[in-house]
Structures are given as structure tokens and as C-alpha cells.
Picture (spheres, rainbow, N blue to C red):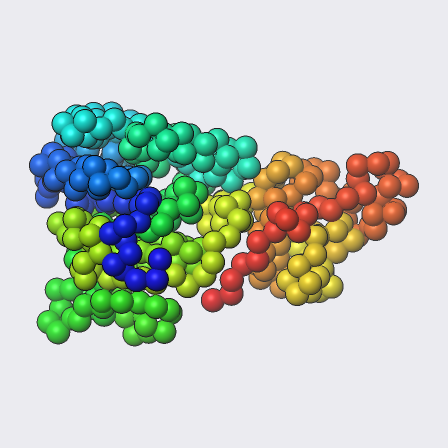
Length: 373
């Protein structure tokens, strides 16, 4: 897709709606707002398009039933609130879509589900099968079991990763403002940015104002999500929930973010953006050049130190002697096994330890370079 008008005929669209668009000022779930959004998505389905809905709102929906005045600060209470709210949220979606003759399927994900190949392939198969059966997938982060270490942190980033996972033609981010502005929308003279085609178009844009009290992020998280999506070949429209129908029709509302990169390996995208690393491998200068410049696998001879506690298959950071991260990778050995291997050639390891140890610590197909900002 090269123009926003193309979204009107896109075969598959991921729509993300934030907590602030689904709840009232008192923290209660706004059923009327939810039904209005469902009506828009049902029209899209009736026209033959496929829709994946990434929704926030589980914790916000659980506040009122539990008598909580605001979003919990401690993890355990947040998990309990999400458990109560998720059931209520999905029940409302089920009811609202059923009024249009549509079925929904709940898909709860954590970042851990997307790091390991088997896990993300399962998620991909489940989503594809739901779409094939004519079901509208309702995706949310699994806040009930997610810990701080394995969280996406916000559903904006989750939406971008899901867009890539299901090969969406476009992503629509619905929030509590109608577009991206060059400063706080409430500030006199703030200008709406209608189109963004690259990083240069965002120079001088002030997005420091935080999101609402019931959400987890503001425009900063949304722009991070946009960079993930557009950098992997998925264009984005950012606008308010009230403008959802017009956005899906390709009308000039909100802000259009054009594609800045090509589609990539799904696993590499997950590794770069969703993985929470479990440790670090310190490389010598030669290994840094080999990994970064020649894109080779990481061999034991080029590693000088191991940090952290991880198992084979876990994501780790690859860092310079000065501690600067240059890449992420899925390590082939656990932390306990590695010290004996460091600094040795594969020939030495084969003679000393036998077959199976004379191989890469991190294969080049399991390495993604970290962009330096």
C-alpha cells in the first residue's frame, strides 16, 4: 500500500483500540463506545475485509467491579484486576459482535509467547485459522500471568507485532486524540500532522505528554509502535475511535504513516522488539566486526565473558568490550555451559569435549542487529 486511500480495499487490517477509548472518566467500561467500534468493524467484515482487533481495557474494565479508584501500581493487584476485567471485556465484545452475526475468538499473548519459534508459530497458526473460519480475533496482552520481565508493556507495540505476524495490509491505531500533532493538542497553535513519510517529518515534534490515567502509555509508545510497523512494511493510520469508520474508508483523517522498510523475517522482528533478554555475551573487537559488518555467526573464540542466567534458546544481548549492545541473538548453550567454551576454536572444542560442542554459540540466522540511536 502506497497511499492512504488503499486502506479502503485492504484485505486484512489490524485495528488497535486503547483503554481511554473504551472507558469513561470513572474507569467503567463504556459499553456504548465499545458497541460503536464493533459496528464499524462489522461493516468492514460485511464488505469482505478481515479484521484483527487488538484491544486494551482489561485492567480498566476490572476497576469498577473490584471497587478500585485507579489503575493498580503493584503487579499482583494489576494481574488480579486484569483477570476480572478480561472476562467482562470479552463478554461485551462477544455480545456486540453477535448482534452483527459475527463470532469472536480470544487470543491472549505475552512477550514470552513470541520469542521462541514454537510459541510464535502456534500464535500465527491460531490467528490464521480463526480468520479462515470467519472469526474476529480479539487480541490482548495476557496481563494476568505476565511479569515485568516478560511484558510487551503496552498494546501499541503488541499491535505492530501482530500486524507483521498476520501479514496485515495496514494497521489502524485508535486513541483519544484525532491525530498526531506537532505539540500537545491542547496547546494553542498546535498543528495536525497529516502525513509522515520518514523520520525527518517528525523532527521537532513534542510528544512528551503522557497518556490517560487508565492507559499505559501516550504518543511516545504509539510512535514506537508505528516505527515497528512501517519499518517492516505495514502502513499505519493514527486517529481517534470516533474517526474509525472514516479511517478504514481511506478518508483524510488522522495521520498517515507511510511504509519505511520491507517485510522481514517474523522471528527477527519478534527478537528485536518483543524479546526480553536473559543475559549478555561480551565480544572481543574481532567478533564485533564479524557479527556487525560481515553478519557471521558468533563463535566461542570471540566471546570474552558471560553475564546472566539463561538456558539454551533464550535471547541474549551481544555487547562490545565497552558494554554497548550491538545485536540480540538466541543462544545455543546455557550460561552454565559457556565458560568452558570461551576463547577456544571449534577444532579445540571438538578435540576436548567431543562432537556437538564444535558449533556456533549464536547462529547468524538467530542474530538481529540493534539499531544505534
